[in-house]
Length: 137
Length: 137
DNA sequence: CAGGATCCTGACGGATACTG
DNA sequence: CAGTATCCGTCAGGATCCTG
Image 1 (cartoon, protein in one colour):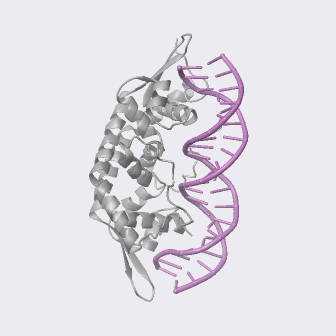
Image 2 (cartoon, protein in one colour):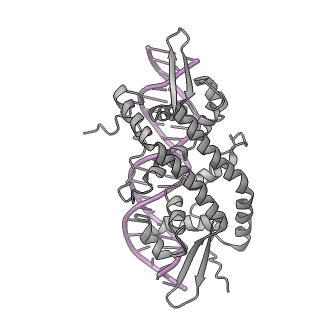
């Protein structure tokens, strides 16, 4: 039935030289991927462990994201045919290398988020971007 | 007013240790930010130049993304009060540093996209990612 | 326990029309 | 030229119920 066709975006307008970046950003840019691989970076975990560790995620998104990650070869899924089912997820080498790349981004974020926040506040005073954000009483 | 309040997501569930990364990823994870800063990385450009360079972008998204980038201090906006209006956008130091971080991600993407694509194709054959669940016996 | 299937909402973003 | 304002479709993603 394929309830969600993952992306299906109209990407025919792309200048092909940065198509790879988009593909990766579409994956790590979503709401949960980074959190999941960060959690899995600590080691092999089962479904319920992930659900507990990644606070606020729904089963739907957890399952979906895990499938995408497995499909891309970033994690492995091991199902043990036991009476209480047990499934364990683990990062692959590829997944760990992605984790390193994400860590680099995290480093940049940690180094500059203050600066960004300051700029954002300053812009608010200046009137730049005039987000005003929810003035609705 | 305030047609879009940017995020307004229910982010109260976050374990705060990776909140910065999410903030950055929410910015570069959108459809156009990376393309715009990549384009601006070549030098100072005007609105219409950007619209021409970033193929397929609408005025709405161009203006909106530029405002966000300006608000965060990643680009500067210079308006010349001439008869045909002229506005130029340019990366700030902060913006250039982000560009470097993005380039790192792009490097990873370029290095591994083949592997990912291969895994994806293999998964399609195996049935992983769809309902099959592939319980390897 | 580990998901699958569905319904529904709100955000994202395209198309279009208008303005200084 | 450089935007602004508005309408509208699409889709990510949460909540909920069901199953092997």
